[in-house]
Image (cartoon, rainbow, N blue to C red; front, top):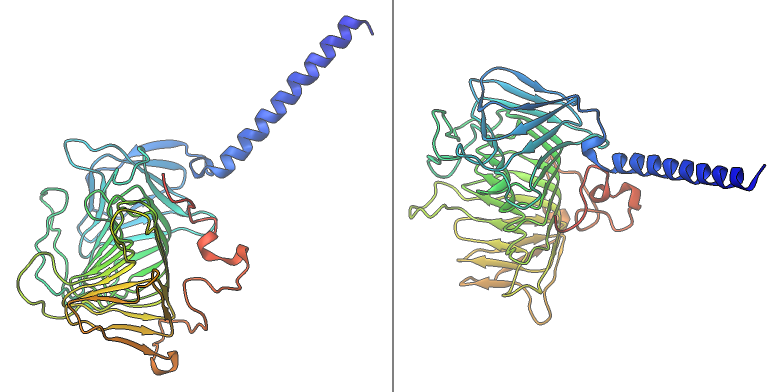
Length: 388
């Protein structure tokens, strides 16, 4: 073999190795990018009104260009692994999915194929998010209008505590929260199934519960610009296994329990969420003092086996901590503004958990000795990281 032939062979070998490396890199990239986990054959823009049963499929990328209302008792079914992308705001308002009262959303992803609702612009508050309107009691008469005004009944609340608005399982909502919560449940009843859901980098709250009785498990709010979880308007449901992190500088609370929207009248009943196995992580380096938990007037909050750093209460409101240990910044215990400074510590055995709760012997969202591959907050369906 001549010298020239040897050089040509070496060049061919180098080119081949570069090609193999590029193919491997492409395969790795596609495996780490959920946009490419499935073969999206087509792209479709969702209409402004869905008035009959509709299924969104895994092989299609769905674009949300404006508020989308599910009406007329219809059910919106979303397949595992489906991808929805919100486009920048238009003259018709920011992208939103609103499940009106009497309708259902059935969005059942899986651990290895979550349903992802994201935005074309990867910035907090790029779209409004998902709003479910139900028939359960709320403490105020609700006349709220979403997304401006449309010829659609967007009221919520009622007397049906066990109604079913569908299910959200293994769902991740990214860069939403333009006008409130990334995921909002308004007057939703406990017949609805909510578990394994993440709000990632919301421009407002991560999860909002306005009235209703719906229960939830395995919720994680990552990097919300306002509150990780907000309970309002007489919400009386239960949650277990909850993680709320707030790394963005302008964030204020990880968890808020309140009961009012600026109205002067006394509500018909109190907001009172019961949360078991809550963990909060908070950045206190930001300007001003920050507290993970706040409880305001006409509301209560019960924490069971939870790990929190601080709590703030307004009015004469006792903070009830059961089976958990209060902590604080150096020199600060529980801070109760204009309150009785009453903190009630009880043992788990003195609090009767109903059948919704799973009994645990540890504090926080994750058992301290759990293996990393079994930590639900590190599972594949959860997006990691603090910022976009």
